[in-house]
Amino acid sequence: MNEQILISGGSIAGLTLAHWLARYGLRPTVIERAPRLRPGGNGVDVRGQALDVTARMGIMPQLRAAATDVQGMKFVDAADRSVARLDINDPGAIEIMRGDLVALLHGATEANVEYVFDDSIRHLEQDADGVTVSFDRMDTRRFDLVVGADGMHSTVRRLAFGPPSQFLRHKDHYFAFADADAALGEDRWVTMYNLPGKMAGIYRSGNHAQAKAYFIFRSGVLTYDHRDVDQHKRLVRDAFAGETSWRIRDLLAAALADPDFYFDALSQVQMDSWSTGRVALVGDAAWCASPASGAGAELALVGAYRLAGELAAAGGDHRLAFARYQDSHRDLVRRKQQIGPNVRLMVPRTAGGRWVRDAVAAPLLRAIGAVQRLTPARGVQALPEYTAAG
Image (cartoon, rainbow, N blue to C red; front, top):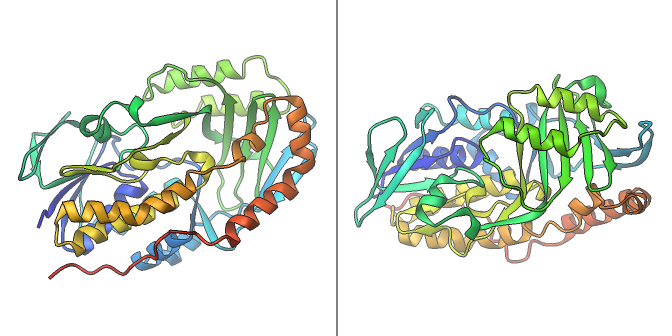
């Protein structure tokens, strides 16, 4: 039956997978490198089939109660005058802070799932009957299956599939976000200020006392340790060194003081297969569409639901289940990885490009959003109701 399943990663994909595996009578264990659930993060959108997943989990009322109330985004000049505004309120989606969604998912799973915090997988060894897993801290254990839900820099993917260079596709930008003084931004708006090839902004939800600072800058591939926060802060500080216009210095000072400062590349993960033997991937580890897609939470919720459901429906036959999972979810991933002009509109390369963007941003983005909402999701399979075999 392949009942003992190790999930590496305690964020959206990993917790959703654990919930459904436990509901189908399987025995998931979640291992998370951090000493606790990660509370921070930006706003994420739950839309489309992901709304059905959360409704079936029974957390829709809590999801709506915790939602942000951001009305739109605006671009400003150095004097903080609005040069373009866009209402981004989507009635077909619920925006929620990533940390709030993770807390809801954990609350829906903790009674039936084994959690191991402050530890990580060191080595995997597969054989015909299972996977032997060694860890940084706890003793070696044996599992029937292992699932990597450990993000774009997945340890499981590296150990079971190969080095990151085989799968990561850099999208020419880096981004950071961290806490910021809410007084620096307009209530219920995302405020963005551009310099050529750069953007600084502030996200302020009226439902949350804490605002978030955002930074994006254009760059080729940089060499750095993706776990070294001090190094991340230096890279962002250097990218915006000497910039004194608008509120950049205040936002940067607040962000650099935040211990939960987050920095990474705008990259995508592209893989031909999300499984090898008894090891599978889900979420950003398998298909990261980049934050520019706005689809990370949606893909994680739906993909994890499908993976757990296919394992249950196949009676634990992982070969059959992994193939069906990939076949059913691949088209949605392809669709969401087509991020279009989002980054170019948010971070124009030149001052002239910024002027053009400010002149056409609102009508253009409204048109793109309308097309995306009205265009049928061709090839995307309907979300089934799974039942455990037997």
